[in-house]
Image (cartoon, rainbow, N blue to C red; front, side, top):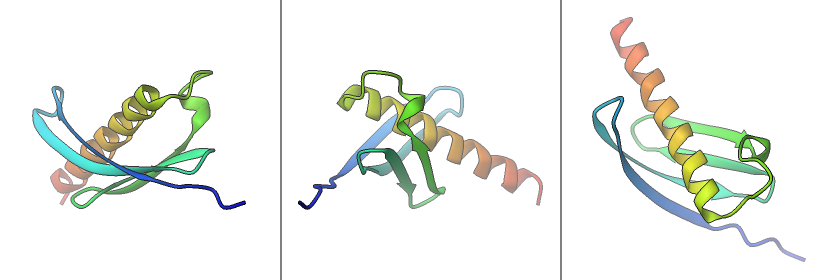
Length: 80
């Protein structure tokens, strides 16, 4: 049986970074994989979400991961 994997687009304003962040995420049933054209790719296991893995929880986890990517990219730029 084939597993349906969908890609969801996400965009939000990160207050701490003071910038709009856009990307997408894929949910494979065990992990979430986020991708940003500007900041790269990052994955996380669902255990970071907790017991309830619904759309809202996945959106929040995707935002967290994308914010981490953007923050890390900002640190890399400052160190060069």
